[in-house]
Length: 542
Image 1: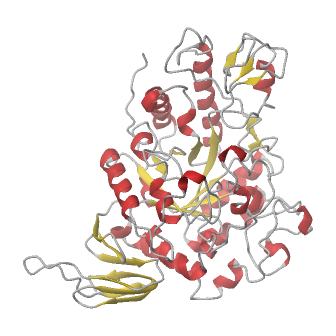
Image 2 (image 1 turned 90 degrees about the vertical axis):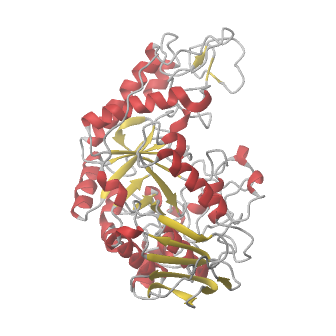
Image 3 (image 1 turned 90 degrees about the horizontal axis):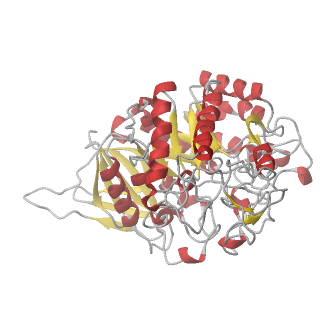
């Protein structure tokens, strides 16, 4: 049985991180081929610095056949030519550092592409145990027939073109001899290779990794016990070798992933006991990427006012009670697998209240590229590099959240000089689509609001991850106090709302203060009145 190393190092910088996710294919194209690249990101770092972002996470940029948008890696030690070179990445990291921005890369730890040389060799060598092979006649359920000279079949991790790396099984079964223990030669070699991959990129200056499908490594692992031990082992190595680097997980269950060794985890549209309820109960209005079993959940940020902040608050409280100060929970506006905030019937006037919550709650805020200007989810796009997932249902099309960044009013919204028909995905066809250029010039724009909110959070420890939050009202308007200084009021529905706290022993009145940011909210002395789609951040100290 492996030991249970206890992680100790916690880089202090992560507590103040403002995360920004970049889907590199769609952010900025520097060479006119219609696909975004690393130099394009470097050229646009001024926007992120101006906005106040201090940490960027880039979706996979390694060599790949791109059957799953880069989540099918064919060489972990090479940059995909569409994005540039290793030198371009180093230049990006160094330029970002001058802007006060750290760079995280996406690490696909649980599988490779079926075009990776490791796999092509394994498919012809029965003695190779880097992947999970059932060397039997009839492929077991879920396995894919061998494409090489090796008999039998392999286990994929997601799409059939993504063979699962062998990190072992937590439970053995005599009838399934391919279930190797976690300390077999293949799993041990894969754990060592993960360290080599991470070490290579960390030595080039990146600040850490967001780990794809982090819970998927050890198979048949009830309670993720062996998977947790694996990540604790890697975390202990990271603490020794690169103590200022961080690991964030795509797990969707911070109460499990942070004790497993991660510095932080995202609330996602899946994961945990609620299957992503914490995030979906805030944003998911069923107007974009959707699954049938999600439809029972009404989201809080909906004009009809049928939702509630309670599922989110309860999930956050439960997770924070478990993890304490060992790590962080990140709250994203969206991501490459989930609908944007600007989705379906949600209008631009509804978005400011969402960012008011994002940037005043004690989670790590994570902005998906373009959400800061209110880019919308584009429905009806064709499958692009695995964006449509048929087994997830007819409404699970991720392409609509992956369209090019809208920089200005020029051709292709400033994303690329390529002909429109050569773009990675089409630009939002709406002639009134938001752009960075237009919103920077408008003091009342969403972009300028997001910038002010980020600056306010950065200058006010009471709004950061370490300060107390005290919920006064978990209905409409959602009302809470941060650090006994800032009163936050959020009413995301169309109808007005009011809140008057019950007086106990002469206490309970809201009082007065100085409005720092907001619209449509009035403090009456004994309560709060909020117009539709309103929000306010009030400095109670005046």
